[in-house]
Length: 75
Image (tube, rainbow, N blue to C red; front, side, top):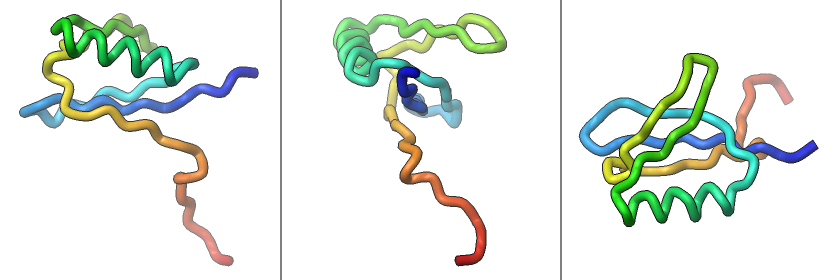
């Protein structure tokens, strides 16, 4: 089973964030960098339908790694 990577994209001058998963992190980064350069639209599909993000408005792209995940509990 291929490992997926959780991605969070935030937009400039907006509180809106988009969260989804990608299969190939390097391919995703390359695609986003190209779209930002060309002022393109990044399209993905989630359970609510298709979403298009104007890559020129991307403020940040974050990858959440499982080892960074913290859970409450007693040690």
